[in-house]
Image (cartoon, rainbow, N blue to C red; front, side, top):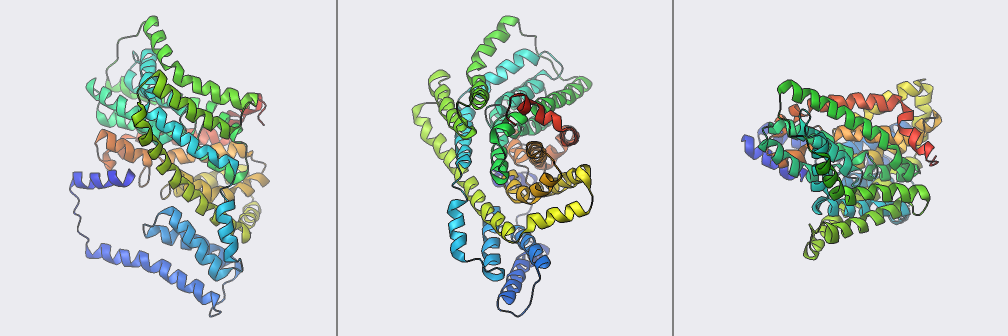
Length: 481
């Protein structure tokens, strides 16, 4: 979807498709670098050159980045980096790599990913988003910027049951944005709001990036789910505050205040979707099921309310939803498989522990270390999607965080918020591309439009980073830690 929207944008602004001489030279340059690195690895393999442990460790990351710069998908770049490095620079048998391909994704927690993706697909198409928007509008629609505020609140409610930021932007944005324009809001204002508010999809309760982090670091998935509730609520309030201020300053329209009876009716309509929150938290907290089983319950429940309660989907639509979820799951699981191999090579080379020793030797302290982590993750978010960043960076940074007594749940939420920021700015911000497609405005225009909320999110990142109790209080209160 991101690539499709990017092509649409080029066509819209009239960018010439023809390649210039400069772009041809750049293409040869980016292709030539990985070729030279592969030749260097083979030269080391056959004894023509000697590469010591330090440069060899750095060569892994240089080769990965060089392959990514050619435009190669991250999953294939990870796999090729592992194969080249293992074949040329280690004594690890290729059989061990093949075995790791299968054992790396045998973990029970990984099953939560396709189930949450399936639940998100049913919720997106099943009428849940429409009813959540109606309820949010009945509560905050009469304030300045009421429809925009309703969009943020609806994103927060949908995020409680979805686990995907892109699905949140699609489900809420496709309904709210046309309504905002019809009521007199500028499209760029509405698209800016929904782009950033949609990122709540990976911070609130269920979250695919949280599952991936839990798998990478052996952290409790249930504790991570619950730990995002208070930070997500705070971010919702902060985004609403900025939206209300801008709407009041620009005199954007307000809606008629809903009566208590109308609000109650809208709540009753949305209660079926919101009950999924009770099922997930209640089931995990009571020990009735694990986080993975909660994902399966979410998928079944979403199917039930979409087909039999709201009746927004027919049985004929189910194969299409299943195929969509299967495509997304296959893509993510393929990335995870190759990232597990990459992590295996890093561990075999003892890179995470060596890096942890170096960081401790610099005496950064927890404050300096978390600042370094935020900078690294924000930079990585410019080039990779959240899942890839977490799979590559978490195994490297986690050992140092553990040695500094930084709680793994708090560390996971910090990483999650960094991923939220990366979703909302170019060049690979998926929320940006999806919102651009829905709103039919250019990426450059939308990038400028999101700035007030993006700055708010960066300030929120600072708060979450240095206020660990915001993330840890609720899971501790519920006895999950």
